Image (tube, rainbow, N blue to C red; front, side, top):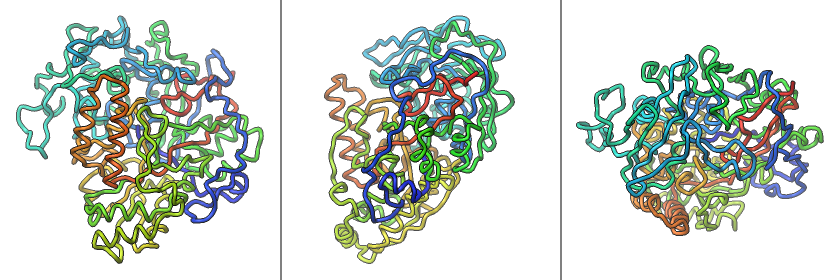
Length: 597
């Protein structure tokens, strides 16, 4: 899942408490000393456990909604998926419980987990009987099949995950590869195409997925928002995001607005007896968008809103307050996440088509300044040397470029690489980052400062969050035309294994000319083959070994700079009940929360 963080340079008061240096600076330590004692009550347990219903749960967010869509078939942000579970029910879901239980996938729309046949190539799910949409019409298996098939249209839905598109047994149209006939191009351009090789619905309650190759993780795919049912008669294509038809306990009151926000109210046709996963405590939920970053923190602290929905971690000014105020520490949590804050190094931008020029960037960068841009060791995370975070099964501890041994960077090695790539005096590139994200601005400035020391001129380019991946840093031709040699990025596992973490960010086949992918830099055919082999390996130990090998192979090509294994400081208002960190998301579970009555 895409993840966004926004924290400005750490304020001086926070520096004093944590021992952090200013973001982007070469001086100071990594923030390892004098760590404060936060409450961490929501880590592994429930804060203010309650079944009391009523009231309004209030969320806020800096800037617009990511990719400007909450369409279940097109959204790819962690916070969006977390919120989406309040109005949409997928075939399966991660359990809404604290601790390791939150990593368990359980039935949701379906009566049970999937049943496989044909050696794991065919998977069948049964939709619960008598479920209804917000308008009282019945939810059918055909709606699930249609939802999945529509999401595979990459012209209309640019940001959806690629799992179904790449794994279902169907020929997708691809102009770049010359596939334009006898192929599926979505329900809008190829409405009469026979899709039975990919998905079938023998009756109104059964949906069957047919895969090209065996895959043991189908229940994890079934929890993706793409399986949230969409009634074909109500589908309006790209406009569907304005008011997705609810199958969960809440529905939209009016329309979704990616710039200003939205409200969810109770769905009168949701039946709690069919849904043991959701408490549905508040009467309504509001999400206020377009806020200034610091204002989000201030309003949570003052109890005017309850949660920063993006789970970005408190920014510098608020971090200072939290670390010095015991009352705020009691409502703060500091989880370590299965996430990575990293930077793409795009080999399609000259002279980065030369591996030694890419290595020069890695050697020249100051890893401590990257870490400090995210808040230091305590509030940002550990310096990363791999794409896989330590929490993901298959992680291997390696450091090809000796980053940890050289916390200030390796300018001498960088200059050697520049000589080797024929650019002894350096070169010029641009670096994309999200303009609403102060922390990403600090990251770009850290690159600018560190790389300038070896003659590489980096020009930071701020871009809006709303179309960052769909039209800018995720669109291959835009990257090339605008010399975006570097792009800030962040990633969390779609599910907790190597495939759920790596496949969407290191597989070259997810890169689409229409844009939308978080991956534009990893284009290694050998890695694509390794992913295919690992995904069908039945021996768990062997499969996990393969994830580490894939990680190593990606790092050998120097097409990414893995900056920080993520950690955040989250703060909640005094008003919320039933609060816990869901480990599948790495932050608060938005389906469980209530408000004090």
